[in-house]
Image (cartoon, rainbow, N blue to C red):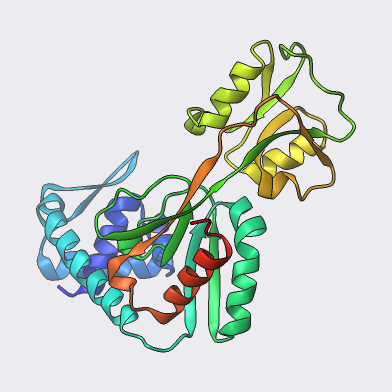
Length: 283
């Protein structure tokens, strides 16, 4: 069995259907089905069973799953090492960050990067998902929590200040927040320090809107739906918002930059890491 066959096998095992696996691999549904049929035919084993919940591994599939994952780790290590050995500052550079950070903090860095190195093509994957750098889901990531994965080179770039905002036409809220609407992170991020700070500041207020996107929060705040805690880098640049004086500012968040250690020699990654450290870094 070659790596191509195992790649299809792993995609089906993780995605649970041929269609989802095809989308993940960037190929057609029939292609995945054909590769699985050939794999099972050659091996003489059935690796998946169809259920109402999708495709699940049979006992034969379970027995080779660990071996397939070992093959994947080896293949990805080879890809990372080859990419790291490329001494030309050109090619696609996959960058993961939150949407607001990409738009309002990282964009000047990327503009300067492409000006200095026109053959580098930045590909920004904006969102709150924490990508697996060992699988090369992204080459480099910027996020507000430290990296805990093994073999990751990371650096704290700066501490981002946050502020409390309301629409420019909205009157200042009462001290206890009675009648006030709160715009916050969604349930999965309800433990964020700024969410807790906002709820404690206005104990009588009611949550009226949640989103994992700070950019969406800012737009709803600008429409007068309620108050929101936003990164100053975002909120201060939107004329439809005004910064409120809450007595003390919301807690800030550290910004971390990280990449897999095998990618340290990739010129285009080093170029971005150095620029980000110079243009964003505070220490």
